[in-house]
Length: 287
Image 1 (cartoon, helix red, strand yellow):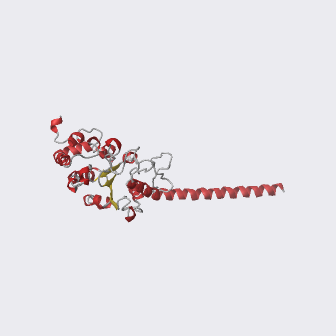
Image 2: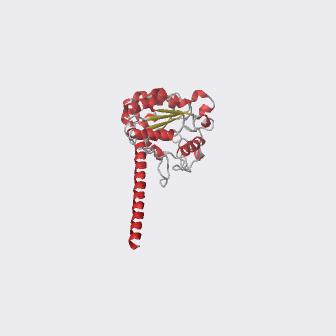
Image 3: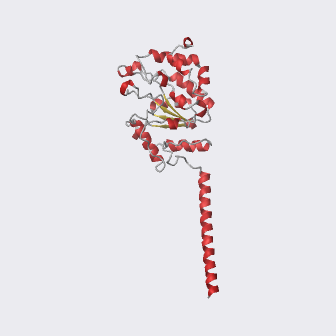
């Protein structure tokens, strides 16, 4: 079986059984995808995340469950203790026992601004609970080569473009009006590949650019408003299940709720008025 693959990345991707309908679609484009993987493996001395984690985004969010794609740039470049990469195979998220990256802290701040009563920022940077609700956290490049620090020729960002074009084509064809969220100029390069009505754009949440358009973007509310209109399940950005979910109510539902409250108040007034009238009649009978 090993001889069928021209790259280690291909051996991993095409053997995954837990990526749902992604597998069938990727197999259709196998030769093109393998060519991308060969270039990745031949550029620089090594890359991370580790090979077995490179495609984790597709494992967390199978194709048939994709409702939203949040595009990042490239994997976190830092290494943790014991030569463990910080990158987890999906954009913005990190392991639960890792410190929260500054970009993710800013993401939590924006969600809190949009859902001040419902949202409580978790004390970790694990976003798998969101990914499992249909949010595909995807970087423009799925690998990072540390040799890039010495020479930009080792960058992996452009190598992955043909693979990402395949991913977007699959999403456009197979999903129902998927919402694409682009943060930062690098990720916006993919904007032309998706229907304009389905795209949300803002500055990157990095501390260097968050105040230039990320804060105040209202993307997290807009995502749920759109999903609600499409009659699809909204995203609960909360990890704390004791908190109210970060859902938006339908306008009609809100109006019905207000109408119901009005009727209940009116009914209450009628009951109170009737009770007072009975008391007066009762008092006059006693007199």
